[in-house]
Length: 231
Image (cartoon, rainbow, N blue to C red; front, top):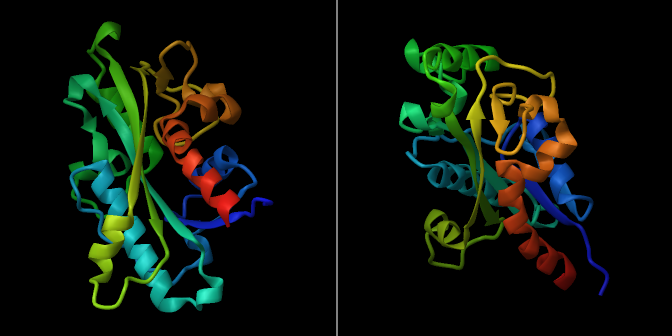
C-alpha cells in the first residue's frame, strides 16, 4: 500500500518552530499551524510540567477543530509541544517559564523577547564558573487525534486518554555570551555537549539532528510511519 501524507496542525504560530518540525518529520507529513486557523482559542498554559502544558494546547485545539471544521477538512492529528531551558544552578529554572523568564520580574502578561530572556540569564549566571553552567533543553510533545468522543463520553477527558506524549532532551552548558545568528530563543547561549559551538552557530541542519525537539520527534516517527502506511 502506498503511504499517504498525514495532515497535522501544530499548536503554535511560531513559524520557526513549525519549519523545524516540518524539516524533521519530512514530506510524509503535511504541517499546518495556528496561522491557518486564526479563530482558534489560545488556552491558558497553567500546568507546572511540560507534559501538562503540551496536553492543554493539543486537547484545546483538537476540540475546537472538531466543533468548527467540516469532517472532510479535519486534519488527522494535533501536535503540541512545550519545551524550555533548564539550568542546573538555577534549580532547573526557567523550565516551563522559559518564554516569559524576563516577564516574570515585572508581572507582564505574555512572553518576553528573546533578547530580554537571554540578558536575564547572562546576568544571573555572571559569577557562575564554567564547570557549574550545566543546562539542558527539554521538549515534551502531545500527539492528539482530531476525533469526536463516543456518545456519552466527556470530550476533554476522552481526548486526554487518547493523547500520547514523547519526550526528548539535549544536554549542554550555558556560554558566557551569546553567539551565532541562526535559531531562536536561548539558542545563542546554549552549547550542546560534544560541541564548541552554540545552537545558533551550528545551523538548522546540525541542530535538527541533536536537538531536544528532534529527539522527541524521533520517538514519534515510528507511530507516524505506521499511520501513514496503514491509511
